[in-house]
Image 1 (cartoon, protein in one colour):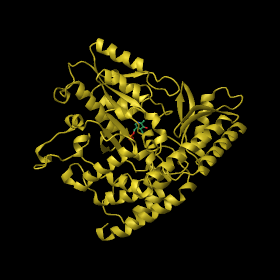
Image 2 (tube, protein in one colour):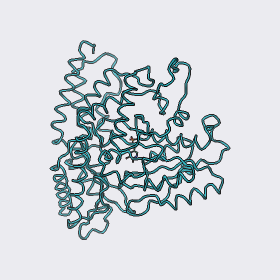
Image 3 (cartoon, helix red, strand yellow):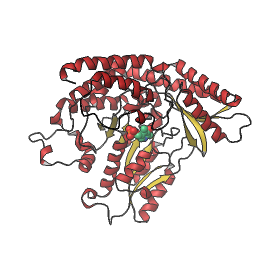
Length: 472
Ligand SMILES: *Cc1c(COP(=O)(O)O)cnc(C)c1O
């Protein structure tokens, strides 16, 4: 394809995208496929000769789209949302068209300056103090890795990058057993090691860290000659929304001089609504916080906002300046690649800018408030429904329930069977989790285009499928 045909195909793609979004509600949320079914229909080798765009786009529609799980579907209730609000998708087209590498200020000055600006907007919207600077990372996983590297380097007086960790006391990191797997992975990659990630049991209904147990674990490690480095607080855990008392975690960590990173990848978006901020009270005193606008808020993946209290320690940990990356004559410059693990960076701030302007904070708050209200309503309906029980109370728009058909001997098996049957049906997509040792069905509302009707329809489908299983 030549640049002269670019407009034709870009318009075709935009028309397809608009139709796709308009008809999404009528498609199955998830396809029913066996592994390998799609690959079997694709040629084994790349073509030697150019193929016409007409053929490529037709194959996209025929072979690929039917094999996709539709994350923008209004009845996508599985995992967490991965919203891509239409206005932010338009920004993505512009970003891809320019395809700028935004690693340094001078490699795209407007990208860096817009990033400083919109991350500041978001920080204020979330109710965080001005003391936080911020950067848009690709994912919460890399933000957490950057935070773990920084806590490690602080504990080692910034010598770990140079000397490695061999022969040093064990660097220890603390969290609850409810944290996301990205915390484990960050500790693997940072050389901390799984054995030095101290996971304490999540206690009480919110499954949070117990401050006294945290304090005791740190003291015991010090006494054993280890090197406590930091604590990772969980706000809105992936399974059932487990949340630590961040203020208490910060208090204990401060008393021992430890760094605190808060993982609020999903729940953080809801903090644009002041009434939900109790969930992370104390986050304002943390050292580092990650919130994914690419989950609930509506920025297309990837867009992870990483708020940092002391960028100096992060830069000291992550910046490498070979000659070809130096910018002479400017001392106050921010080069965001020095705040992250990868060097290369996309122009992420543009999509956040489009998102925040096109919907306004009021529009985004309304979406989130609706999801939370509909989840609370459905949880009450389920609590009152015969044959079902509520397993966890809603944390924002996430809760878990269980099917309890009369006479069932193995409830775990019955609930897995129900999840599979519902997902085969295709009108709704849900996932299961294990809570206190038993299988439960997990529901979250978060799709940008979801309506209250989708919540009702979703529940109707689940009951209908369950009744079918009981009957058959
Ligand atoms: C989704 C999620 C992550 C991982 O996010 P990525 O941006 O995909 O790396 C980490 N922690 C929590 C609590 C999450 O919900």
